[in-house]
Length: 367
Ligand code: CIZ
Ligand code: SF4
Image 1 (tube, rainbow, N blue to C red):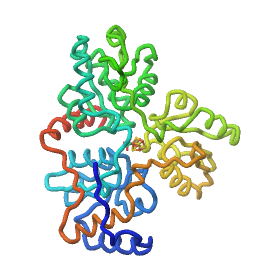
Image 2 (tube, protein in one colour):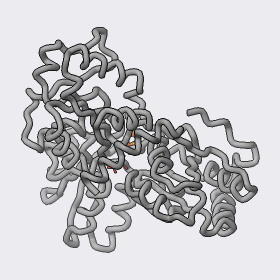
Image 3 (cartoon, rainbow, N blue to C red):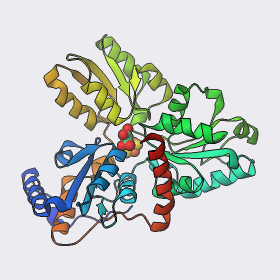
Image 4 (cartoon, rainbow, N blue to C red):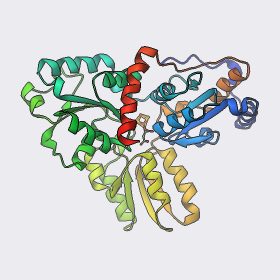
């Protein structure tokens, strides 16, 4: 989405002035406001978060705070959309910078997904296929899934959702992240031979597959990926093990299959945090996820003599998360103080109607 430039007065403010003014505006707004911060946000933003978490936990937390009129979501666009869908009537969800998107979510759009579904219909397999979308997707894809009997999943509950899905139909169409789909299906005991990749940019009408291959597959995995998690390699894991023989390696399931296989464990941001926090004093952790979360865990766990470091020696922030910068936060807050709501994320009712079905299905399956 397009973000217009910030007014001149917000450019060049010192970190101290930004901090004072943000703090003051939050005081003025009091309990009318809640600020949510995703684990991948930088320290200069996360310090203001009333709640921290993954996208789903934050969306639920915002909605549970019925007295909060304004929810400022410091995260990326699809997260603010989910928060709006789950919000109470009257709550307004605000994304401080509209250009904070997610490159993975952008790898599947509704036209491509509809075209894929049409091809599955042509192949005679759409009616036995259950669509599952990762929460990292636009609201209209969640609506598509809701309309077609499928479910949303997160990186925490993907195994439970896929287990449900295989009981519902013969095949799963999983988008937009091929890696989360593949890693989870492999952990469930399925083999690579039972999976095909759907390339939305293929020259043919069948995502680069033959109709026979689509008919034979159990999982049709959308060719999408996360550019941050795609950076982690098996080589980095080997180097970490050489340097620290007792290291435990944990990576996110958006990493490639061979990286997940070479790690000791894998999981969502919430799981990574839990594993490290609950490990014995003195543990050493190499982590394959976004750098801001890893650095914060490293800092927090120092007092327990734990060493926590990122597998990628070249710093790898999520560049779209990074677009939520303090001047943008101050600008939306100042506007709220003056009675203006800027950057509100509103999912149209006709989309929210079906998207909520897919989100509620996930909640029924996985809580
Ligand atoms: O759902 C989220 O917040 C994402 C994108 C990742 C995770 O593992 O929590
Ligand atoms: Fe999207 Fe990857 Fe950034 Fe997560 S880390 S918001 S999947 S680009």
